[in-house]
Image (cartoon, rainbow, N blue to C red; front, top):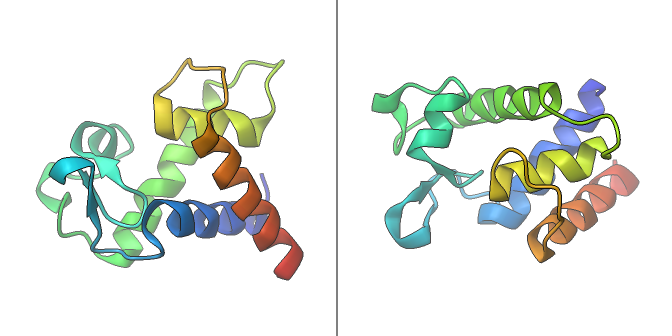
Length: 116
């Protein structure tokens, strides 16, 4: 993925997950930040446990880029990269069936790539 694709993807995730609110709390207090990471997924993507819940914008972006790269490393050859990334972030690794959430992220991504 190119840098511009990753930036557009970050913007799409932040828009759908939190309306770009880096302090957002969701899922009954289990998800935090612009990308709505659960603590375990945050740590899997290289975030420090003590930063979850109070990480800077830069740190949240760094961890999300790490997550995207992790998802790409596990992508099967027969699956579209954007669909795999969005499905993996929402449903976990190994899920192949796009959800309504996946569709929202992909629409937001398309809007980002057409406006920038």
